Image (cartoon, rainbow, N blue to C red; front, side, top):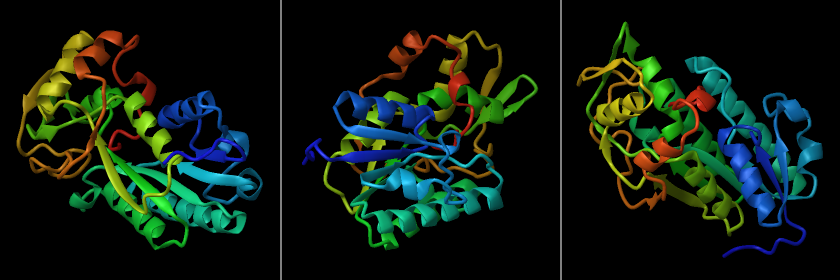
Length: 269
């Protein structure tokens, strides 16, 4: 159920990033009062700076922020500290809905420090008294180049041939926006792309489309950001919302080389 626009202020943490900026635009176009919060706007979730002011009068907080470092200890510190601070300040401000973006399969990859940190973030949200919605998304089309770069040795990209169901960032932002203006789920939903590929196959298509000469090799022992994958590691295990944009169409519309605008956060999600 969509809430009334009147007197509904929505604060987007990480509101200037890839997903956050799209969420801000989506909600603004729908007539909601939406505020993009980030360190550049004087809001720092790690220190708590600016949170009391920006959350004053807010009905909903959407957290799509990401850690500036992917090192295991740093990413855990970021998601735990920033989430604790957000939830504390939200409680004081009377916020009625906390929406967070997480990752499909995060609880199935304990060898990944990033995934462990996302699981810890989700746990804090679920244990809080604030009504919440968690949106778990698969990887984004925008991360194809970043994923390839992380798996490159010389002129070869080695990736496991596991199931892969990424989607366009626009589709992620659309789902997050709809969840933000609805009633809290007090649960988790998943969103994935409309098509399922083999991991190596999709990355190969992306590189070929951008005239990237690297060779993609299917290697069952290849690791993805430090962790081994099984066939179901990166795809929804049950029903999921599906994005509308197909990868082939996204490639044809992409005005710049795949992933240039989103070099960070490739494990995301």
